[in-house]
Image (cartoon, rainbow, N blue to C red; front, side, top):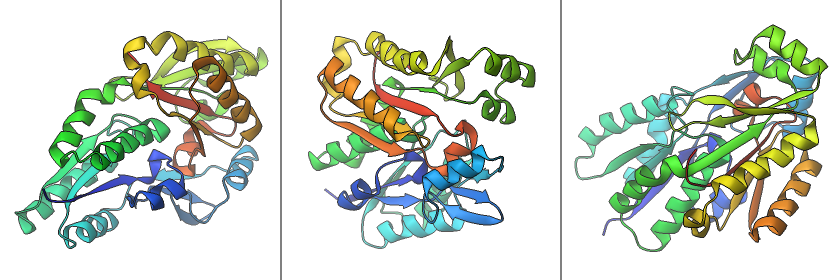
Length: 290
């Protein structure tokens, strides 16, 4: 069986150590801040990025670059490997379409190679969990077809819920009205959002107060993680925008409540943090629905 290379984008928010250990290739998403373009989370400290955003800077996110995408694909193909590309949601970025077009173009040049692209319809560590599952299946000896089929069959069961600390970042991104942001901030409303089965970011409720919003992340996970899906949850993933103490406490709560010892914590990379803003916390796991 021909070997294959797993490639993903930096919006999967996987820890750098994991990417290196598992031999993954990553295509960077970009962030433009103060006239400087950053690749993924490289070259900018997450805390510094979120502090700048909190101070009023307005960074912009940019999709993957076609030339860089082709370069990563060729790296694998020239090594005699097939390619499995696992992508950030096509509904939230043009990145998947870039990867799909690259795959189509290169398939003519490498007719003996298999190049498969998977649109996760997910973001951040929810996308990352699917990448981790693909790695696990590959290590078990599964073929590229078997792995991609598993991803397509199960991707709508990776749930992601998030809460944000400042409504104004959602307002700037067009997610809520300016009036809603102002009124919500005055009465301390904290929204909860989710990525749906259609890959869209939608409201999943709202509560008053930061502590309650974080607690609601856990209660929603508890109701969605039915017995059928518990075996897949060997790892729960948390990503955050410069609030390490709160997510450390959240991770401990998850360990105690669900008996899951492996809780992966990573920063929300700037390309996603542009929209979520400082103080955002998201949690990803496998459940009965998104």
